[in-house]
Length: 193
Image (cartoon, rainbow, N blue to C red):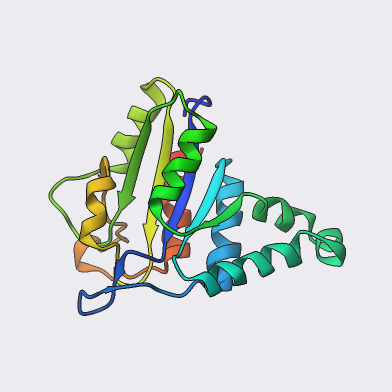
């Protein structure tokens, strides 16, 4: 991987779908904050964004981050505080893009999105990883979804769709990882040694 890349992880709580395909907003969980922040830190990602338009959810994220960033929590768990320092909660994906392009105004942005559902335009992780290693510097944004997947209107933001994650049985096997487990696998496939 080219170390001049800037890499961000995004967890969308909106726009996503429920089990019957309706557009919904899901709730942020404590595990969403902690587990993916620790994965982001492990793989040296620059930023981890939680996206929710719900003000109360953003306030909850703020309280959790504040708790772990000071006092006894910081003293006893400095590694967790370091991982959580990369977390930012924003109201929509446009705010994520604005933040990244403000930080890195001269770099092109590529949005990649895995999906557990097979889609014709999906690319293998090995192909994307190799391409990232050969490309000029840029901002790589890995977008994960909650609920029953990212809603189709968001697809217009995506430059590259990634393959589903399959176990040893392939498409015939179980395919319903938690977003946190899937996120760790995806980061390892794209960035691990």
